[in-house]
Amino acid sequence: MWRGKLPREIFEIAQQGYAAAEPVVYPEGLEVIDCGLGTNPLGMPESLRRFLEKGIPCDLCDYPEPEPEGLKQAIATVHDAWKVSPDQLLVGGGSIGLLVSLFRILLRPGSVLSGVSPQFTDPVLQALYNGASYEPLRLVPPRFTIDTAFVLEALEKKPDVLYLDRPHNPTGQVLSLEDVARLARFAMEAGTWVISDEAYGDFLPDDESAAVLDFPNLVTCRSFSKGPGAAGIRAGFAICRDPDLAALFRKVQPPFVIGTLDVRMALEILKDPAALQETRAYVRAAKARILDAVSKKPDWFVADTDERVPILLLSQASGSLVRRLAAVGVACEGGSGYFGLDDRSVRLRVPAPSRLEALLERLANA
Image 1: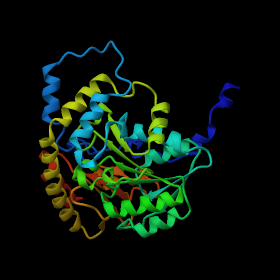
Image 2: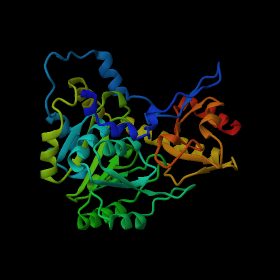
Image 3: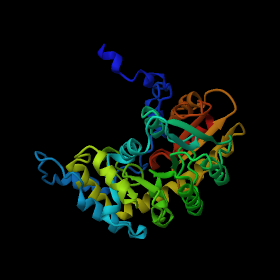
């Protein structure tokens, strides 16, 4: 009888996130080029490496701070263009941890989540696990252009939450700041919360972040995983200008969500802006070369994308592009990990510098 109390309806949600995809078989003896999960192609910053090598003592017997005030102050100082105070910053276990807590507050059975599709799958799944419904705005292949007017039409239906990846995952396109402001303003009239997930936001200048916009119904989530090169520390933060939502977030989020060492490492990363500048420069140059390479394949189509963002969506008319790339030793994220896509499409991430030339050669031979 105790099993009867399990929410069996969750089993009926067949969609999985791309990180949970089935393993792909690669040719034996061929070194695989990783263009998969959204990590920093240059690796973790030298400042963090030096911190770890020094072995700075840290007492892990004690619990971490319930809310790391020093980290919040450092974020507000480093990102001064956003003009936020520490009390407007929420912290969590990566951007996905923030989204789980935010959706716990904003979505419940009968609520509606809207967003552009395809988009980062896991937040949508969390909404469905909460009993909310998902009403996506389906982008048109092969370019998958995000049309702001199309999104505004969706807001006329007054969803509870509009979830935007910005930069967009998987295409890497960037909705303009002016368009985000239009959406947030219209959403206020519709009674809709807008969440701008900027997990890839560090590849853009701070003054292009939605965090500069002063709308009480707009929440901007950020991560240390992508541009800062520290996916392993599981630290993230959000900019929230509504004090009631901030108070509810602090009430429902579990305590001690960011570990003591995670906070120390995040602080080290914030001291090293040069590492991010180097990453931005490499990504832009490398992505331009990848886009040029795939443009020479007549049966491949690239969705709209921004050269500053390290991901792109590549498609073909038929057959599995995942297996086609695996056959030449290229790892990617298959489209079947997204709502509305299948493995005719893949998300590619810019590889490490040492693997770029090999990637370009393999793409030519795929």
